[in-house]
Length: 322
Image (spheres, rainbow, N blue to C red):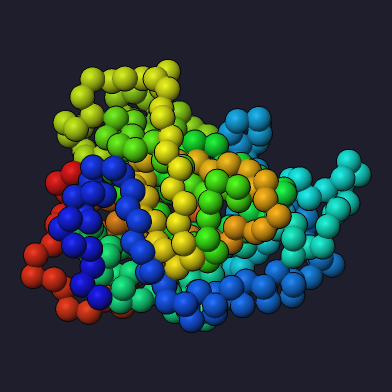
């Protein structure tokens, strides 16, 4: 794998996202789907805290932040859809049709997902985007089950995996075809150039999680000099979102500052996807103790350079030049 072409890199620069068709082969997709089905049907409810996943935005006042969530960075855990319960807190459907997501270390603990995450192909893409020490974290299957798969409001990934300066890029891989009915992604094209990260998701001092506002003079911009942002447009400017249906096996790269969202799955079919994030671990980038997901002591996050082939002769230093 040689990474992205100059044309693809320029498109990513311009739009803030990029679709890479057939990133996964049909057998790789099938293996991931089989693993997902096995995980969903095989986990036990006997000792499960029945944690529900909520985003903390829009109508949701609090983001999920219990111990089951906060200690999931090196585990495989299951988080339920809020719409899967009745008023008494009982599941209204089989557990395998009630899960919002499985996370957050599939890339180390599940062989099929590890094979498509910690790979030469992933490393080549990260290096072609300018990472010097790309580190992979927060891998998860997002299920969006039929009828109840919840909408995800507009957000920026760097809010949730914050480095100083920002560096997060999402690798979002469809395991099933996505469309308007089952909740495909929508993007505010180019918003990464005009929307600094104005808050970050942190571990609260009192326990749990919360959002911390960033002072205006410290709002994270990418590139660091902010030259591509122009005048501060403020958050009152309404963004226009364009839907992005993709096919199973397609990869969508998402800039950490890009505003994106997805609607509720109103169809009778699931919308299974696999996603993980890459951050810069090289000198000059700080991933601090406030982030909700913390590396395992003495192990750190997964370093993609360990899976890379020979470094390309020309590297586009995205993180330093953009």
